[in-house]
Structure formats: structure tokens, C-alpha cells
Image (cartoon, rainbow, N blue to C red; front, side):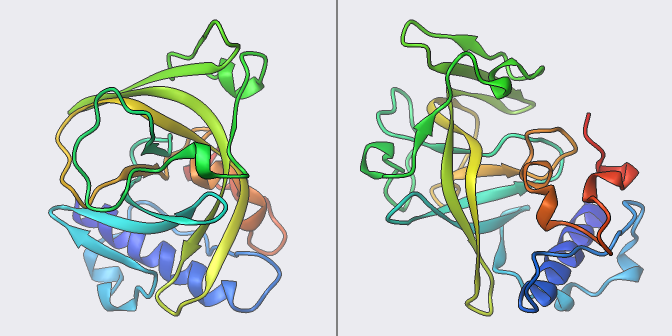
Length: 218
């Protein structure tokens, strides 16, 4: 757990320091075998904070924006948030995301390439909407795949916008979450993870971020 936490802190710190310079986000290639002695946790400046044993990232979702606090998970790919209407939602502090109030929310159809990715249990519905089922060790998430405009807020106050983010609009939930955990953002190696979707922003010297073996598309 400790090496993963230090890697996340280092990664987010570098993102913020380079985002202010323009030209997109740039990420120094960091090996996963980072040890606690290599990085100081005080170096991280991105707007994340510990919640129990996880780290939470503040994300602005939809137009106009609403705030979602998502668990940062380097071991999974899908980004999901609780959505209305919700047949089985756990209690959360902030209002549940309502896609009907967003001008930039769009469900993915069964014909979309994302609906046919392996590992998501995606299936077509009678309305041609791509449904998904995604399992974790401690629970599962079910809902529909969609795209939305999002922005990550840094501690400096700057925001980094992303358009057309593929995410899971979660309507049926199981697992243990507390009221401050409104979703989960996957920083894994899969093609649908937040990092892989926006690889053009994660470059080093003009090199595609996915060329780093540690994060190559699967």
C-alpha cells in the first residue's frame, strides 16, 4: 500500500507543476517500484486528501459543474459516480449526480467501441444504451456507460478540463463506502482508465504516455 500511495502523490505533484506551464499535462516517467524513501509525501500539491485508507480526488462533473469526490484507485480502470435515478444507492454527503441536469452528458450506444471492451460485462439494452457491470473484491457497480465533461481541481486553485470522458453512471451499488466517497476514478493500465483516455495530455518530450511499459494499453 505504501509504495502505491507515494507513487500517486509523486504523479499528481508533477501533473500540477507542469500544467501551469501550458502545452498540456506532462508526466515524468516514474517506475512503479518506488519505495517510501524515494519520495516525500509533502511534495504532493494536488487536491487530494486521505479518507480512511484511500485518497480522494475532487472532480467537477457535468455542465454546469457539480462536485464529485472519487476514490483514486491505481488497481482498476473504470471511473464511476453514483447517478440518479438510483435503485440502490448508499448515502453520500453531497447531492447525487443527476445527468438530466447536464448539457454535456451523453449515454454510449451499443454500437460504440467502448461498449465492446473486455472486462466490463457490457450488454445492450432495449433502448440501445450500453449497460455495464464491473466487479471489485469488496463489491460491484452496475449502470450505463456515458461520456461527460469533467475537470480536476488542483490545490493551487487551477483546474484541468477534460471533454468526453467515458465513465460509468452507477445506478445499482454494492460494497462498503462512506458518505464522503461519491465514486471511484480508475488510474489502472486498461484502455478505459482516466490516464489512458487522455494520454495526449500525459506526454514526456513529445512521446506518447502509453509508450511507458508500466501503463501501456491492455
